[in-house]
Image (tube, rainbow, N blue to C red; front, side, top):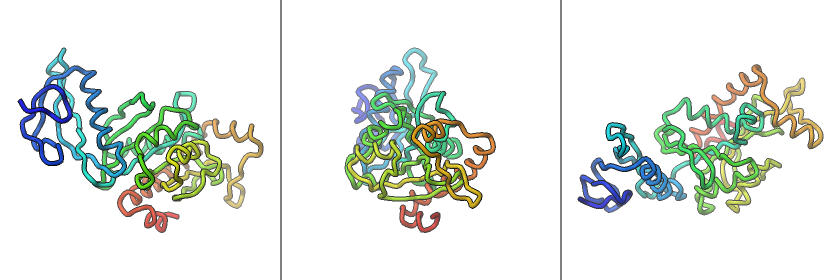
Length: 277
């Protein structure tokens, strides 16, 4: 039996390569808790490193109580290839679903539903959900923080270890300075008063990451943003839910925003900004 670099149990059908990855299918028996723990460990070894991308190596893990119940897990092997993290800002919990302040979270959920990503995997430290997949053939991880908005930075910092890695982070969020139905890409700008973005800037100690800003403000007759006046009105507005008509308009924006995110992943943020802004 050869030792697996990812598990303390089971067997491996092929020796390690120079990158530490098995060239053939790994097979073994484990408990559900061990399986989950090793998935997390695997992710952290590569996904959470700034300039790494996962390489899929299929492993079949069987619940020891029911060997017939098997799961396919993608394990990560370390390689020096950039990987993008798409993080949707919002507040967790049913009471905040479909609210304007959760527009970023809603977009990432839409992206997950319309593209080839794994099921959401819940993590506790820090609280978040992650899904692995691809955008236009490029490995991408979707992230939904399960922290409140002003603590989003601890989730971003879990993935990004240095300023260079921050360039592969795409943060999606609501923007009260833009009218509903609008979308804009930006890079390296200030938080604009958004608590979630400010939390990320402080945690990463850099502003150099991509933002996808989704307009949520009411429109004037000329199509400009009409921002509510006063802190109390702003909070009430942001925590209010979209009407059915507003949500239909937002979904049209989502289509263009997802295309913009794919352009960032494939062509880089500058080319994407030139195309979509």
